[in-house]
Length: 361
Image 1 (cartoon, rainbow, N blue to C red):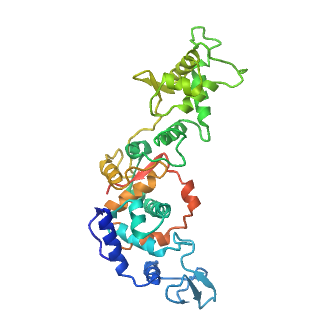
Image 2: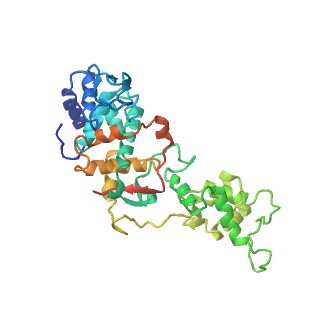
Protein backbone atom coordinates (compact mmCIF):
# COMPACT_ATOMS: atom_id res chain seq x y z
CA UNK A 1 0.00 0.00 0.00
CA UNK A 2 1.43 3.36 -1.01
CA UNK A 3 1.89 6.09 1.54
CA UNK A 4 -0.21 9.17 0.83
CA UNK A 5 0.37 12.72 1.94
CA UNK A 6 -0.72 13.38 5.48
CA UNK A 7 -4.25 14.66 5.52
CA UNK A 8 -7.15 15.19 7.89
CA UNK A 9 -10.04 13.36 6.26
CA UNK A 10 -13.70 14.23 6.09
CA UNK A 11 -16.28 11.46 6.12
CA UNK A 12 -16.47 11.00 2.35
CA UNK A 13 -12.70 10.94 1.97
CA UNK A 14 -12.42 8.45 4.80
CA UNK A 15 -15.08 6.24 3.25
CA UNK A 16 -13.23 6.33 -0.08
CA UNK A 17 -9.93 5.37 1.59
CA UNK A 18 -11.57 2.48 3.43
CA UNK A 19 -13.15 1.19 0.22
CA UNK A 20 -9.75 1.28 -1.52
CA UNK A 21 -8.19 -0.75 1.28
CA UNK A 22 -11.09 -3.22 1.34
CA UNK A 23 -10.71 -3.68 -2.44
CA UNK A 24 -7.26 -5.22 -1.86
CA UNK A 25 -8.74 -8.06 0.18
CA UNK A 26 -11.23 -10.69 -0.96
CA UNK A 27 -11.87 -12.67 2.20
CA UNK A 28 -11.59 -12.04 5.92
CA UNK A 29 -8.64 -14.42 6.04
CA UNK A 30 -6.73 -12.10 3.71
CA UNK A 31 -6.54 -9.39 6.38
CA UNK A 32 -4.99 -11.81 8.85
CA UNK A 33 -2.47 -13.10 6.31
CA UNK A 34 -1.53 -9.52 5.43
CA UNK A 35 -0.90 -8.92 9.12
CA UNK A 36 1.31 -12.03 9.34
CA UNK A 37 3.47 -10.55 6.61
CA UNK A 38 4.83 -7.98 9.06
CA UNK A 39 5.84 -10.42 11.82
CA UNK A 40 9.56 -9.77 12.44
CA UNK A 41 11.48 -12.82 11.22
CA UNK A 42 8.32 -14.54 10.04
CA UNK A 43 5.87 -16.71 11.98
CA UNK A 44 7.54 -18.74 14.70
CA UNK A 45 6.61 -21.31 17.29
CA UNK A 46 6.09 -19.63 20.67
CA UNK A 47 7.81 -22.55 22.40
CA UNK A 48 10.89 -23.49 20.34
CA UNK A 49 10.97 -20.49 17.92
CA UNK A 50 11.02 -22.78 14.91
CA UNK A 51 9.66 -21.35 11.66
CA UNK A 52 8.71 -24.83 10.42
CA UNK A 53 4.99 -24.52 10.98
CA UNK A 54 1.94 -26.15 9.48
CA UNK A 55 -1.25 -24.10 9.25
CA UNK A 56 -4.25 -23.44 7.06
CA UNK A 57 -4.66 -20.10 5.30
CA UNK A 58 -6.20 -17.55 7.65
CA UNK A 59 -5.78 -19.67 10.79
CA UNK A 60 -4.69 -18.10 14.06
CA UNK A 61 -2.98 -21.26 15.24
CA UNK A 62 -0.26 -23.38 13.73
CA UNK A 63 1.30 -26.76 14.45
CA UNK A 64 5.02 -26.64 15.10
CA UNK A 65 6.46 -29.66 13.28
CA UNK A 66 9.72 -29.92 15.30
CA UNK A 67 8.17 -29.78 18.80
CA UNK A 68 4.63 -30.88 17.94
CA UNK A 69 2.97 -28.07 19.89
CA UNK A 70 0.15 -25.78 18.84
CA UNK A 71 1.17 -22.13 18.84
CA UNK A 72 -1.23 -19.17 18.86
CA UNK A 73 0.23 -16.77 16.33
CA UNK A 74 -1.09 -13.49 17.78
CA UNK A 75 -0.89 -14.49 21.44
CA UNK A 76 0.64 -11.93 23.82
CA UNK A 77 0.56 -9.20 21.15
CA UNK A 78 -1.83 -6.26 20.88
CA UNK A 79 -3.90 -8.49 18.53
CA UNK A 80 -4.41 -11.11 21.25
CA UNK A 81 -8.10 -12.02 21.26
CA UNK A 82 -8.99 -9.48 18.55
CA UNK A 83 -11.95 -10.76 16.56
CA UNK A 84 -12.36 -7.88 14.11
CA UNK A 85 -9.00 -8.10 12.34
CA UNK A 86 -10.31 -6.27 9.26
CA UNK A 87 -11.05 -3.15 11.27
CA UNK A 88 -7.60 -3.16 12.88
CA UNK A 89 -5.83 -3.63 9.55
CA UNK A 90 -7.83 -0.82 7.94
CA UNK A 91 -7.16 1.56 10.83
CA UNK A 92 -3.42 0.86 10.83
CA UNK A 93 -3.23 1.28 7.05
CA UNK A 94 -4.97 4.65 7.34
CA UNK A 95 -2.60 5.83 10.06
CA UNK A 96 0.42 4.66 8.08
CA UNK A 97 -0.86 6.65 5.10
CA UNK A 98 -0.63 9.79 7.25
CA UNK A 99 -4.37 10.27 7.59
CA UNK A 100 -6.16 11.63 10.64
CA UNK A 101 -9.81 11.06 11.46
CA UNK A 102 -12.10 11.08 14.45
CA UNK A 103 -13.11 7.92 16.28
CA UNK A 104 -16.82 8.53 15.70
CA UNK A 105 -16.29 9.04 11.96
CA UNK A 106 -14.29 5.83 11.62
CA UNK A 107 -16.85 3.90 13.65
CA UNK A 108 -19.60 4.96 11.28
CA UNK A 109 -17.62 4.19 8.13
CA UNK A 110 -16.34 0.72 9.09
CA UNK A 111 -19.47 -0.33 11.02
CA UNK A 112 -17.87 -0.79 14.42
CA UNK A 113 -19.08 0.39 17.84
CA UNK A 114 -17.63 3.78 18.73
CA UNK A 115 -16.41 2.51 22.10
CA UNK A 116 -14.53 -0.31 20.37
CA UNK A 117 -12.97 2.09 17.86
CA UNK A 118 -11.97 4.43 20.68
CA UNK A 119 -10.26 1.62 22.59
CA UNK A 120 -8.54 0.33 19.46
CA UNK A 121 -7.14 3.72 18.49
CA UNK A 122 -5.95 4.52 22.01
CA UNK A 123 -4.09 1.20 22.12
CA UNK A 124 -2.44 2.01 18.79
CA UNK A 125 -1.48 5.49 19.96
CA UNK A 126 -0.09 4.07 23.20
CA UNK A 127 2.15 1.77 21.20
CA UNK A 128 3.39 4.69 19.11
CA UNK A 129 4.13 6.74 22.23
CA UNK A 130 6.33 3.98 23.66
CA UNK A 131 8.71 4.50 20.73
CA UNK A 132 9.31 8.21 21.32
CA UNK A 133 12.50 7.72 23.32
CA UNK A 134 15.33 10.12 22.49
CA UNK A 135 13.32 11.75 19.71
CA UNK A 136 11.02 13.32 22.26
CA UNK A 137 11.14 16.29 24.55
CA UNK A 138 9.75 15.96 28.06
CA UNK A 139 7.49 18.65 29.44
CA UNK A 140 4.82 19.27 32.03
CA UNK A 141 1.42 17.99 30.97
CA UNK A 142 -0.06 21.32 32.07
CA UNK A 143 1.36 22.83 28.88
CA UNK A 144 -1.29 20.93 26.91
CA UNK A 145 -4.35 22.03 28.89
CA UNK A 146 -5.67 24.27 26.06
CA UNK A 147 -7.01 21.17 24.28
CA UNK A 148 -8.26 19.32 27.38
CA UNK A 149 -12.04 19.60 27.35
CA UNK A 150 -13.38 16.02 27.55
CA UNK A 151 -14.22 14.20 30.75
CA UNK A 152 -12.78 10.86 31.83
CA UNK A 153 -12.99 8.55 34.82
CA UNK A 154 -10.30 10.71 36.45
CA UNK A 155 -12.27 13.97 36.22
CA UNK A 156 -13.44 15.17 39.66
CA UNK A 157 -17.22 15.30 40.05
CA UNK A 158 -18.84 18.54 38.90
CA UNK A 159 -15.49 19.90 37.72
CA UNK A 160 -14.10 20.93 34.35
CA UNK A 161 -11.95 18.20 32.72
CA UNK A 162 -8.88 20.38 33.29
CA UNK A 163 -9.33 19.84 37.02
CA UNK A 164 -7.58 16.48 36.55
CA UNK A 165 -4.32 18.39 36.14
CA UNK A 166 -4.65 20.02 39.55
CA UNK A 167 -4.37 16.66 41.28
CA UNK A 168 -1.04 16.03 39.56
CA UNK A 169 0.18 19.54 40.33
CA UNK A 170 -0.58 19.07 44.03
CA UNK A 171 0.96 15.64 44.26
CA UNK A 172 4.10 16.95 42.60
CA UNK A 173 4.50 19.29 45.55
CA UNK A 174 3.96 16.65 48.24
CA UNK A 175 5.90 13.68 49.50
CA UNK A 176 5.55 10.32 47.70
CA UNK A 177 2.23 8.77 48.65
CA UNK A 178 1.02 11.93 50.41
CA UNK A 179 -2.69 12.68 50.08
CA UNK A 180 -4.12 15.97 48.88
CA UNK A 181 -5.58 16.48 52.36
CA UNK A 182 -2.12 15.94 53.80
CA UNK A 183 -0.64 18.59 51.52
CA UNK A 184 -3.34 21.06 52.59
CA UNK A 185 -2.81 20.32 56.28
CA UNK A 186 0.96 20.70 55.96
CA UNK A 187 0.67 24.01 54.12
CA UNK A 188 -1.76 25.47 56.67
CA UNK A 189 0.15 24.15 59.67
CA UNK A 190 3.24 25.90 58.36
CA UNK A 191 1.76 29.36 58.88
CA UNK A 192 0.63 28.60 62.45
CA UNK A 193 3.46 26.35 63.67
CA UNK A 194 4.79 29.07 65.97
CA UNK A 195 1.44 30.32 67.18
CA UNK A 196 2.11 29.39 70.81
CA UNK A 197 5.39 31.36 70.95
CA UNK A 198 4.74 34.14 68.48
CA UNK A 199 2.30 36.61 70.00
CA UNK A 200 2.19 38.65 66.83
CA UNK A 201 0.85 35.75 64.80
CA UNK A 202 -2.55 36.49 63.34
CA UNK A 203 -5.10 33.70 63.44
CA UNK A 204 -8.32 34.17 61.45
CA UNK A 205 -11.37 34.26 63.66
CA UNK A 206 -13.01 30.85 63.94
CA UNK A 207 -9.81 28.90 63.19
CA UNK A 208 -9.13 25.91 65.45
CA UNK A 209 -5.47 25.26 66.29
CA UNK A 210 -3.89 22.53 68.35
CA UNK A 211 -3.39 18.82 68.62
CA UNK A 212 -6.76 18.43 70.35
CA UNK A 213 -8.75 19.72 67.38
CA UNK A 214 -11.24 16.97 66.42
CA UNK A 215 -10.59 17.35 62.66
CA UNK A 216 -7.71 19.70 61.99
CA UNK A 217 -8.46 22.14 59.18
CA UNK A 218 -11.61 20.25 58.17
CA UNK A 219 -13.27 23.36 56.71
CA UNK A 220 -10.13 24.33 54.81
CA UNK A 221 -9.82 20.88 53.28
CA UNK A 222 -13.48 20.93 52.29
CA UNK A 223 -13.21 24.30 50.55
CA UNK A 224 -9.90 23.45 48.87
CA UNK A 225 -11.23 20.17 47.46
CA UNK A 226 -14.33 21.97 46.17
CA UNK A 227 -12.34 24.63 44.31
CA UNK A 228 -10.58 24.05 41.00
CA UNK A 229 -8.95 26.16 38.31
CA UNK A 230 -12.34 27.66 37.46
CA UNK A 231 -13.33 30.69 39.59
CA UNK A 232 -16.14 30.17 42.10
CA UNK A 233 -17.95 33.09 43.73
CA UNK A 234 -18.18 33.64 47.48
CA UNK A 235 -21.96 33.25 47.54
CA UNK A 236 -21.81 30.08 45.46
CA UNK A 237 -19.24 28.59 47.85
CA UNK A 238 -21.33 29.51 50.86
CA UNK A 239 -24.45 27.94 49.38
CA UNK A 240 -22.77 24.80 48.04
CA UNK A 241 -20.84 24.03 51.21
CA UNK A 242 -23.45 25.29 53.67
CA UNK A 243 -21.04 27.75 55.34
CA UNK A 244 -22.18 31.03 56.85
CA UNK A 245 -20.40 34.19 55.70
CA UNK A 246 -18.13 34.54 58.75
CA UNK A 247 -17.14 30.88 58.70
CA UNK A 248 -16.35 30.94 54.98
CA UNK A 249 -14.39 34.20 55.24
CA UNK A 250 -12.17 32.75 57.97
CA UNK A 251 -11.60 29.57 55.97
CA UNK A 252 -10.74 31.44 52.77
CA UNK A 253 -8.33 33.71 54.66
CA UNK A 254 -6.51 30.69 56.06
CA UNK A 255 -6.21 29.10 52.63
CA UNK A 256 -4.92 32.36 51.14
CA UNK A 257 -2.31 32.77 53.88
CA UNK A 258 -1.16 29.21 53.20
CA UNK A 259 -0.79 29.98 49.51
CA UNK A 260 -3.31 27.33 48.51
CA UNK A 261 -5.90 29.55 46.83
CA UNK A 262 -6.02 33.00 45.34
CA UNK A 263 -8.79 35.53 44.81
CA UNK A 264 -9.77 36.73 41.34
CA UNK A 265 -12.04 39.49 40.09
CA UNK A 266 -15.65 39.48 41.22
CA UNK A 267 -15.06 38.14 44.76
CA UNK A 268 -14.30 34.72 43.32
CA UNK A 269 -11.64 32.19 44.23
CA UNK A 270 -9.53 29.53 42.49
CA UNK A 271 -6.97 26.99 43.54
CA UNK A 272 -3.42 28.20 43.17
CA UNK A 273 -1.57 26.31 40.46
CA UNK A 274 1.26 24.08 41.70
CA UNK A 275 3.08 23.28 38.47
CA UNK A 276 6.64 22.28 37.90
CA UNK A 277 8.88 24.40 35.73
CA UNK A 278 7.48 24.49 32.20
CA UNK A 279 10.98 24.29 30.73
CA UNK A 280 11.08 21.70 27.98
CA UNK A 281 14.15 19.48 28.16
CA UNK A 282 15.63 16.86 25.88
CA UNK A 283 18.64 14.65 26.45
CA UNK A 284 20.61 16.24 23.61
CA UNK A 285 19.24 19.79 23.79
CA UNK A 286 18.51 21.40 27.14
CA UNK A 287 15.80 24.07 27.21
CA UNK A 288 14.67 23.16 23.68
CA UNK A 289 11.95 25.43 22.34
CA UNK A 290 9.05 23.50 20.87
CA UNK A 291 6.03 24.89 19.08
CA UNK A 292 2.90 23.27 20.51
CA UNK A 293 0.45 25.06 18.20
CA UNK A 294 0.54 22.36 15.48
CA UNK A 295 -0.44 19.78 18.10
CA UNK A 296 -3.28 21.98 19.34
CA UNK A 297 -4.53 22.43 15.76
CA UNK A 298 -4.27 18.69 15.09
CA UNK A 299 -6.34 17.82 18.17
CA UNK A 300 -8.97 20.51 17.62
CA UNK A 301 -9.42 19.77 13.92
CA UNK A 302 -9.52 15.99 14.28
CA UNK A 303 -10.80 15.10 17.76
CA UNK A 304 -12.29 18.40 18.92
CA UNK A 305 -10.47 18.08 22.23
CA UNK A 306 -9.21 15.28 24.46
CA UNK A 307 -9.18 14.22 28.11
CA UNK A 308 -6.10 14.73 30.24
CA UNK A 309 -6.15 11.03 31.12
CA UNK A 310 -5.21 10.03 27.58
CA UNK A 311 -2.97 12.98 26.72
CA UNK A 312 0.14 10.83 26.17
CA UNK A 313 -1.52 8.49 23.62
CA UNK A 314 -2.72 11.49 21.62
CA UNK A 315 0.77 12.95 21.69
CA UNK A 316 1.72 9.64 20.10
CA UNK A 317 -1.05 10.08 17.52
CA UNK A 318 0.35 13.48 16.58
CA UNK A 319 3.84 12.05 16.13
CA UNK A 320 2.47 9.28 13.91
CA UNK A 321 0.65 11.93 11.87
CA UNK A 322 3.64 14.23 11.25
CA UNK A 323 6.61 11.86 11.10
CA UNK A 324 6.02 10.01 7.85
CA UNK A 325 9.61 8.80 7.65
CA UNK A 326 9.38 6.99 11.00
CA UNK A 327 5.80 5.75 10.61
CA UNK A 328 5.90 4.66 7.00
CA UNK A 329 4.10 1.63 5.56
CA UNK A 330 4.55 -1.39 7.79
CA UNK A 331 6.10 0.48 10.72
CA UNK A 332 3.00 0.50 12.88
CA UNK A 333 2.17 -3.11 12.00
CA UNK A 334 5.63 -4.20 13.13
CA UNK A 335 5.42 -2.11 16.30
CA UNK A 336 2.07 -3.70 17.16
CA UNK A 337 3.38 -7.22 16.62
CA UNK A 338 6.31 -6.53 18.94
CA UNK A 339 4.25 -4.78 21.61
CA UNK A 340 2.79 -6.72 24.55
CA UNK A 341 -0.91 -7.27 24.90
CA UNK A 342 -2.93 -4.26 26.10
CA UNK A 343 -6.16 -5.29 27.78
CA UNK A 344 -9.19 -3.06 28.18
CA UNK A 345 -8.46 -3.06 31.91
CA UNK A 346 -4.95 -1.79 31.17
CA UNK A 347 -6.45 0.95 29.03
CA UNK A 348 -8.97 2.01 31.68
CA UNK A 349 -6.31 2.15 34.37
CA UNK A 350 -3.88 4.17 32.23
CA UNK A 351 -3.36 7.80 33.27
CA UNK A 352 -0.94 10.14 31.53
CA UNK A 353 1.90 11.11 33.90
CA UNK A 354 2.72 14.61 35.08
CA UNK A 355 5.68 14.83 32.69
CA UNK A 356 4.87 13.65 29.16
CA UNK A 357 6.86 12.93 25.99
CA UNK A 358 6.29 15.04 22.91
CA UNK A 359 7.72 14.74 19.39
CA UNK A 360 7.46 17.74 17.10
CA UNK A 361 9.02 16.07 14.04
